[in-house]
Amino acid sequence: MANEEMVDWEALPGAQGERNGSTAGCTLFQGEWILDNEGPAYTNETCHFIEPYQNCMRNERPDTGYLYWRWKPKNCDLARFDADKFLNAMRNKSWALIGDSIFRNHMQSLICLLSKIDEPVDIYHEMNYKTRTWYFSSYNFTLAVIWAPFLVRYDTFEGHNTLAEPNLELHLDILDTKWTTEYHKYDYVVISGGQWFYKSAIMWENNRVIGCHNCPDDNLKELGVTEPYRKALRLAFHFVSTNDHKPFVVFRTWTPDHFEYGKWYNGGVCNRTQPYKEGEYDGDPTDHAMRRAEIEEFEHAAKIGVKNGMQMKLLDTYHLSLLRPDGHPGPYRTYPPINDKNKKVQNDCLHWCLPGPIDTWNELLMKMVIDDDDNLGHASA
Image (cartoon, rainbow, N blue to C red; front, top):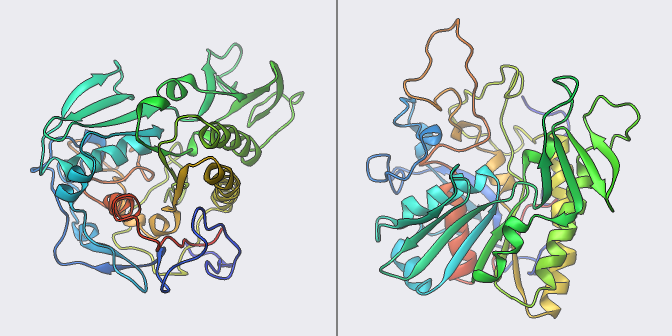
């Protein structure tokens, strides 16, 4: 699956976010995955907060090698997640993770890591559990995930004529109030866009349709995905960087999928059992364009944020996640797994097994937020 043209991650220009380069040669988001005999910090037996679709152990994934890798940043080490240190630092504080189902995946990882010290209680959830709040009573610490997959307002409706007709409308100049009305409540906010922007959609600005993505109406301009995503990010970042409320804000970059031989809807699979080596696979070109838009818009907003007394940092998980095709549920998203070769199996090659590579994201967050380290260089765009 290797690409013919590889990206030189260090040679290409990229944003440094709040930091101007790396310190002492350490770049947290460049490095390699190395074997780790110690294994994961939790299992499906020690943590009961894992969503069934990501519970690869319970769903009888036969291989376990994916559990025994650690991220080794270039020229430095990344400490294991210290739940006691994290919770003590976050006493009387609150966090919100704002985005799509990848953040739900991310939150469950964080809860599993923290629940070894203090068992949280569910104090709020919507009927579909997409927005949910947990409370760690021993530390008066609140952790919420807020469902806002586009960051901007979106409307859904039934298709009128054909199954191919888009049933999604995005308002690129109006933020999703689901998160903006809650923003002021939190001391720490982690935000991300995501692959929902790949969906077919009609785009609106100034109360009029300006085009669409992947829709059958030839009368509408095809806008693609990068520019709508850039506009949504720009609006969200402007809200954050100029807001009177000034939490500690982290933006997490694009999450790659690892579908091979198709996509989720037409038989794509992810059956690799080891990480990629550097240069073995470079990812999807559109993913790179989306991530480049993220970094450019973040860097612009971070400069404004700094002038307004904001702390804004970039959690650049793209490259290290790209190297982990082995970390997804694949066909092991249900129990029992479907072993009948004649039955259609929908693989999940986007979300992450728990435990799994996504636990590293929380180790990076701890390094950035709790340790307040300057070693925040990242792989270039």
